[in-house]
Image (cartoon, rainbow, N blue to C red; front, top):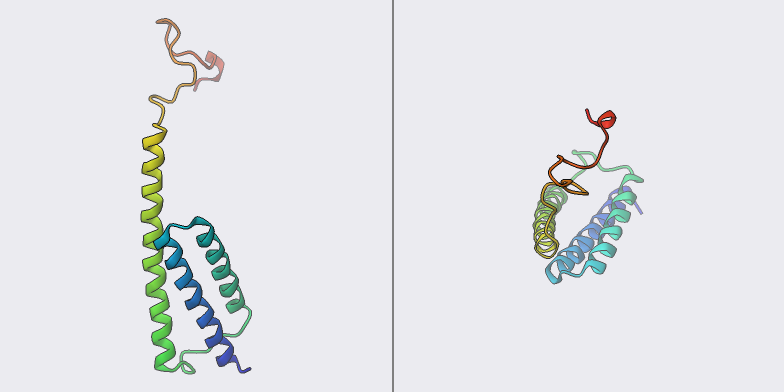
Length: 121
């Protein structure tokens, strides 16, 4: 298999994994998302093991494919960030954050409990 054919086959693998990731994000399936993400990492690792075609060797179709992959990665990254924010908000709703961050609270009007004077900066 020539270098260009190997590269195109790996690009097809990247596109397939991007499809799987999009499906996992849409269905909010964390197991499928993890498996698809690992498969995408594996395919991109294989891309590092072959010599990539130069700009002169790339056809316009191949260049367009790479641009489309780049655009899809950006969209999927943004979708994943949105999903992470929603998950964080849901967790915050269920488990509110602590008020002032002290572990033991105040000791009967004597000021904050906790570290001895030697440990305070």
